[in-house]
Image (tube, rainbow over all chains, first blue to last red):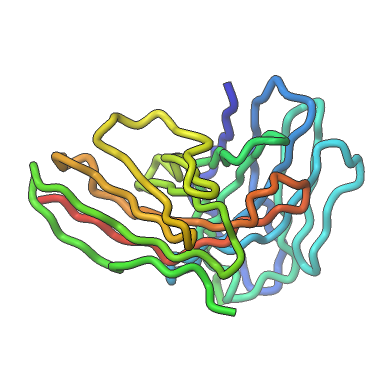
Length: 114
Length: 115
């Protein structure tokens, strides 16, 4: 079975500091994709960053980067220089190659303190 | 380019009633997926449609159904509503090719409350 686990229901970070959100997943497939989505109060999910499992290099998008540990099935998100606008729910998700079904974790609520 | 549009934004129903939610995808997108979001459960996959055909289905009872029209707009129906159906229902659209760079674009959801 394909599962995604986020063990941190809530995290806080000071503005301008760095925070890491954890995510572990389980799959028997070798070809899959991993994602982090952000859901602000507007409720509209926004893709933050994505990682192809076959790529060893960790993905980076401006202040957002991932630490992808394939053997450990771990996919954490690091947010550098945190901004007030980063406050939101963050969801980790996975998708097997060739399928159209995304499996999401339960989310981590990130609070950014001024 | 207009985003994914979901209507209505909020809905209040009573137990036993049925409800229909609507989703208009981004122009050119042929795949529409539906997810149920509840606190503590995250997003649960309901089903995915591509060119009017259901390609994937999640583990929800038969009371949850959907369809897609020739213009790619999709509707989701829940019959005989139960209290536990109260949730945010999110719709997402994509090209539907399954390619590695495929992206999901979400709507703002319909918040359903069942009393």
